Image (cartoon, rainbow, N blue to C red):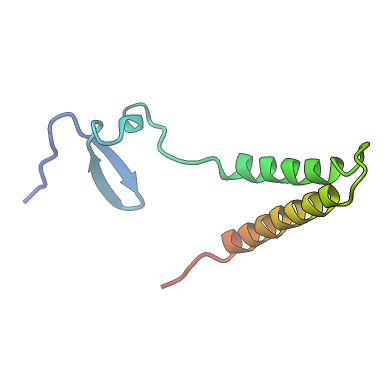
Length: 93
C-alpha cells in the first residue's frame, strides 16, 4: 500500500528514503534549500580566530585584554580542530 502525502507536501530524498515534508512546517523546503554551510562556517571561524590574535597588536596598556584575546582565540582554534576531526570520523552505530 503506497503512502499518501498530505496536500501541498514536498518530497525530499535522503539516501534511499523519501520523506514528505509539509511546507507549512518548514517553509524553505519549497525552494530547495534545506541545509547548512559547513565549509563557510569553518572559514569564518578561522578568520575570526586570526582576528583575535591580530587584535593583540594595538595601543592598549594592560595585559588583561591580551589574556582574554589569547584565551578566546585559542578556544576557537581548539573548537575548529575538534570539528575538523569530528567531521572526518563520523559516528558509527
